[in-house]
Image 1 (cartoon, rainbow, N blue to C red):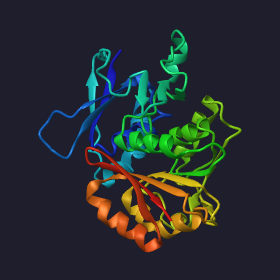
Image 2 (image 1 turned 90 degrees about the vertical axis):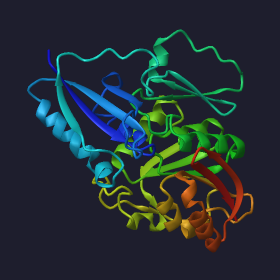
Image 3 (image 1 turned 90 degrees about the horizontal axis):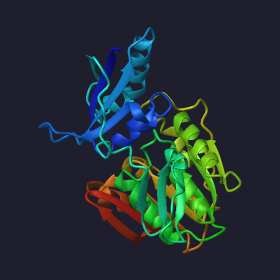
Length: 318
């Protein structure tokens, strides 16, 4: 049997988005993520996708290319390349950044792929550990990306039982699940249909449906921004969630420009109390000054800050 290898290079920011967008189209064992080894400093990872050649192969390639078009158009991935190979290569254990079955984040979170359910029961090292299960094929929000690690650390630090919380741009759903398992009530929203489906899957997979409401939507003026990457997977007539001061905590792991656009909506959506908190992540240190300035104009001040390499997370309070 012949195989088709699709290959593309990505930025650090885009690698998780590629895997999220392809989660329903590609099995985890057919995708390999490795460090970029060429000379262009723009790229961080190379992703290779393996498809068995059959009568539907051209339609599958076209569908994958269409899904990835927004990322390529915004300069976050290279052009998709196609190669014919005799056989799918064997991927050695540990060579795929997306295949680790267990990841520990912070003091309590343990992220496991659903493959872990087929292994001998995971032996916890700490009775306070919180297990988070995700689809094998989902990398976005899996703990691979520094922005997700920072978000989980902040949630572990700030979530209290019975908080009313909002996960804006819920992606894979990992942050919604984490908040629910820390005892919060969660509204998870995203304006991308694939992300909404992924979040709902994560909520059901982790058995927290009684604590998390998942819906396609945006916060306040975010409904006017369209798809944040210029894609076409935004549902028609995305409803706007009113910013009416009802949330004890908001977490948003999204692009800096979206944070800045929503600064006043964040302020209005937080409960009118100095203990209410906004956790922002998903941007690099070069946007820190602009973001703090926008939040300051809206009435929010820095309360907590943490950094991994160039990636930042900042918590704000009224």
